[in-house]
Image (tube, rainbow, N blue to C red; front, side, top):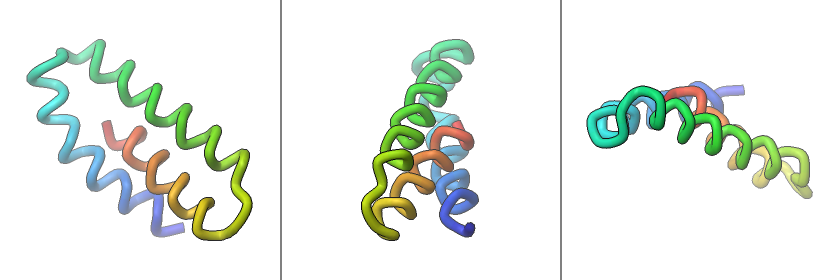
Length: 64
């Protein structure tokens, strides 16, 4: 469960850079794409490590 908030931390740090370069709307779209990729990886998870990595990716998407 701590993987998602950890990813949110990195995503929120990343969002300041993407917000300045891309703007609010495109930054939000990037966060959605990252979340979709993480969800696809989570759905295809074969083991615990892959599931944790997908939750970190989802957290980055949520943080952005």
